[in-house]
Image (cartoon, rainbow, N blue to C red; front, top):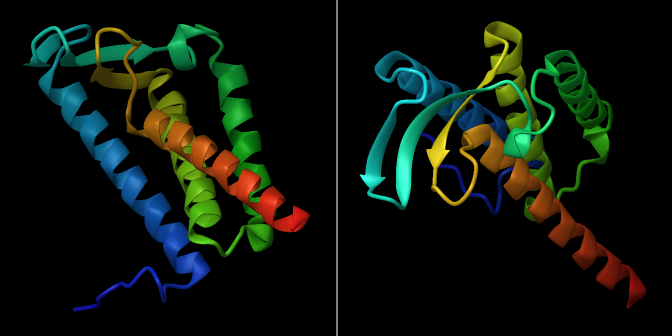
Length: 159
């Protein structure tokens, strides 16, 4: 059995481990949602607070850019390409490294849906917010993490 210790894990191992875990979870749960629920079916987990709702989203976050699949596909390809092109420049710091890995995984997860289904499966429904999925969560957390990482780096460089 291999024990992974984040403190000694190499940059590329952490990066690809995060990408792989997020992609597997995202695609597996989307498959379960698609096979167990019908479109727009909602199952309360915590009534009026959190539901699992199967939504076929042809847009981006918050339902913007509905029906713009081609543009959204190319945007995802661009983001993925920029990350892979600059792979050697990805920070070794765990926050910067895992943040970019989350962005990459989220972009790939939703790109897979757009390419094969022509829509993204959303299912996490908190009722006060548009439904979203694991890939969306990864993208959001990745962007927030990278902003925090960037602010820390800027602070360090000013000292």
